Image 1 (cartoon, helix red, strand yellow):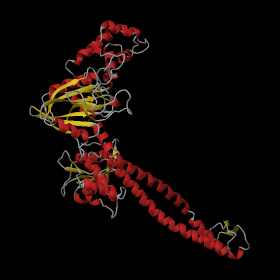
Image 2 (image 1 turned 45 degrees about the vertical axis):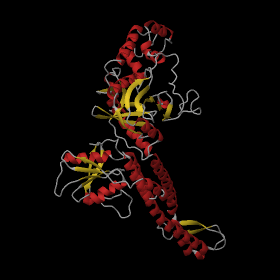
Image 3 (image 1 turned 135 degrees about the horizontal axis):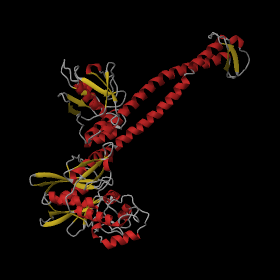
Image 4 (image 1 turned 180 degrees about the vertical axis):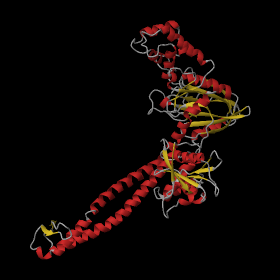
Length: 579
């Protein structure tokens, strides 16, 4: 990733132009690592987004929407107290570091104008957000750092803010002179590459940027001892000039179409090996690069507890199935014990004395072979026969019970796999709340815990996803068991078409049609693609999707949420697509 000091400078220039003079309308804290400051300027509302997440730290204007917690965290409340009605006065970079300061013209408790500063440090696992007063004293911090966390630098409320210590032996590239550059190059280990030399001697440069400078200088991968140092120095100066010029926000896409790298200027080192996408603003670039990552990461955090419950339940049931199958294997011996009992009974006159076995003719076999039967020497022949008949009866009953238990366990495991898929498909807190309510009703979450959550949460409204086909037909898609049941058993009419991925966990999808309507084949494909996308095979290709009229789909009485049966259907093979 390339949110280095150069990218930080470019973002600051963009934010200064768009936000200076903007009035703060609202402050929210969607997650423990993120802040959103909603601002208004010149008739337009913008969302300033700050993230201190170690994997996705950044500052930009975003178009994303966020779900906020029911109770705002203390840091968020502190910012609301000081920044309500404030105006953004300046956005600047700290030196040439990955740190941004946003000054606010605010009001103190007495109503006098004052300055408040929000500092975001974009430094990997050390990323943080601090709130300062006019004397640079820390009023609040997103993530406190004390002596137990760091012995070099503490960040605590009440302390005077100090910038992160500079990297020893490195200077900003714009401060470098030609003479010093050549002296450093001569002193550097000759066998190391030109890009390694840049990375080791100048602060604020990411590996992507150093490779690009070396590539444009024609020395990428060349040992510094053999590299053209004049070209390399010229490339470094060209980079410095680009910091204050027109930016070209560039996104690099891998062969699979996934975002790979980004930068504030055009990247040429990959040639035709990657696809490039340019944006009008750096904020749009960051939204594109991090948008889907953020959604996945946030939902993973919000679903962690329920995912753990499902995983534990699956582990228990899988273990139970193993025990049941072991016991069923033993039940296969039941007929043998019945045969032994019958043979002993029919041969009582032949079995005399005390012996630990007997040999009798198997009258039930065409071969009439001799069978050796173990005996308990403490029991008579008739008592041994009774013992084997009792064992036969016990195993026969056990087999009936275990067969039922095995089916119930298999159904429960199938249900949990569907819930697991629903968790992975969750897109908001409402989906998660539905899943928790469903698991509580099924007994996987304790009633006491469910009742406690109900005190703070309203019963989730069942709202399936809605799409429209190219022919104008409404398509409904459920992501949870409750939504699936609602679509299939409440909303579906006999004339509607029902879709579901074949033999795998997935959503119920319904294409709403009037009686006698015959949708175009392309519309069936679109609905099938939605069913494939909202299933456990989302990342697959040529996915089999069953479809049939809704009248052919039945829900067995007492079955788990989302479970249905159908016997008449067609099958389409499609690539998953959200449409």
